[in-house]
Amino acid sequence: MSAGRDYGLDDDYEWPRPPEGGWTADDLDELPNLPPHTELIDGSLVFVGPQTNSHSRAIRLLDNALLAQAPEELDVIREMTIKLNKRNRPEPDVLVFRADADAGPKQTWYRPEDVVIAVEVVSEESEDRDREVKPQKYARAGIPHYWRVEENDGLPVVYVYEIDPATAAYGLTGIFHNRLKLTVPFTIDIDLTAVNRRR
Image (tube, rainbow, N blue to C red; front, top):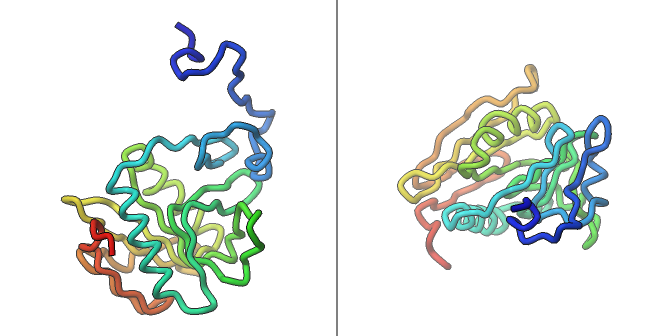
């Protein structure tokens, strides 16, 4: 049985083959038929698997709460890529960015200097990327705040990191269970136990 038949593709389908040196951040907008939420990490395409209920609900909770609490000069969006450099264009689950960086409805990515918080909700297949690879890349690109969200007994646990400008690395500033309360980069108060509530 061919791989094409396993995936419901016809025999003429050709999987994307990287050019010499790998894909670039600009290629992500040009390649046809990529699955939703494809990321570029070190010049390689990363296809994201189906998400779980808890993953989607954690994204919804943080997206809605941050949008309600962000000051006027900031905005919040989910599942948009950041063009870190030529070979890296990851897609955080939620990001807080400078509102004046919104270039309109056709925009597909943000610059790292426009991002204030990058949030990754960890899934089984993204554990290594979200715990090790992406935080290093976000810190090197100068994104000031990184949140990693893990699931524990059905509730999100938020690991909050802030960049140390002297080392260009993140330092853990807190681990939050049940309630996420911060004063930087703006006043934030999120009831993490509300993850399964609709309102």
